Amino acid sequence: MSEINRSPAFWRSFPIFEEFDAETIALLASIATHRKWAQGALLFQRGDAGHEMIAVISGRIKISLLTPQGRELLLRHIEPGALFGEVALLDGQPRSADATALVATEGYAIARKPFLDLITHRPQAGEAILRYLCSMLRDTTDRLETIALYDLNSRVARFFLATLKQIHGADLPESANLRLTLSQADIAAILGASRPKVNRAILTLEENGAILRHEGVITCHIGLLKAFAEPDEA
Image (cartoon, rainbow, N blue to C red; front, top):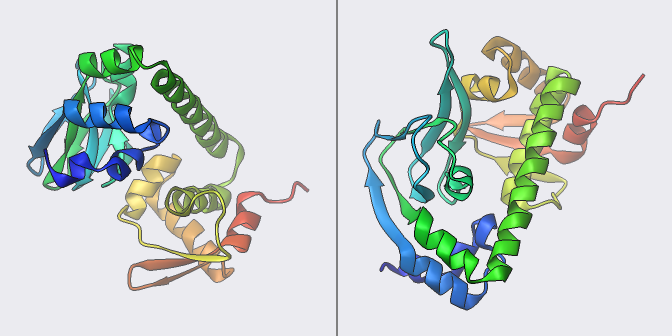
């Protein structure tokens, strides 16, 4: 078992495990299997059985869907420090999307049966999982609201704020830097818009001082981004 795998801080960095006590964390580490995937490897496809969830150490995973028209719909990118595949593992239903390694990727896989055994015999861990799933549902509701109710400038501003909250937590500073690994085409797919329209929205935010781009770093003015994210109803 590697030093990373033995570290309680490593496992608690994933929101789904952050409330686990020390003994539960140790048991979790004991059932995790170190895995590597080459660039372009297909980890699973939509419809596959959900036998495991994966905690990513390094690399990048694309979660996507192929539409009946043959168009790929990007759902999200999984970066180091993120976990995915937990929903199919917990409910026993087939995978709802495809997962592909965009670059060489490394992580830990946790199989379904030992994980369910673990939380079944530790009620507090099961309760923590329920709270995590509720937070995921709330996040999904927020995303749907963003797409359905806000114009694109607001949606892009909300995307930047949501990404910053993943890094800094809910209490954001007045100004924060962001280095995105997503392209404008990726952001467009997430927000349900075209790349040119997303580019225009980003330019609008920049022209109004909400963001400043320099050498791949986006400096975000939180107050102005919030003003775009929640425009006054007139």
